[in-house]
Length: 144
Image (cartoon, rainbow, N blue to C red):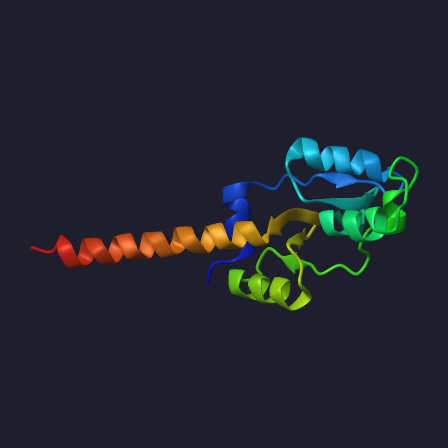
């Protein structure tokens, strides 16, 4: 069974973080610079939450809060859904669908080990399917 560790091995383990004291404006700029839809919120080595594009829209823009003075800790998602490196790709997909989330922090023995997105899951599954199709084609058409 493919696991989250397989996805992280392909995409890398870089985790872009913010602190609860960072302003929403700074977090949004960081997300824009990195081309990502969420930052993991850390207080030192402790995982405190996640700040996503959805949090920005629902808790800042729609509430007419000033992003230059609103801090991430006041508007981040605190109820985290996480996975472990050994969690299967299928289990992750189920978690993300059930909780309606697009970003899943991955915990390891020494803290956060990475983040997988729904796009990462889909890309991994597609690559696996393409490899299976290629192998089946080779078996069927290359047999002599």
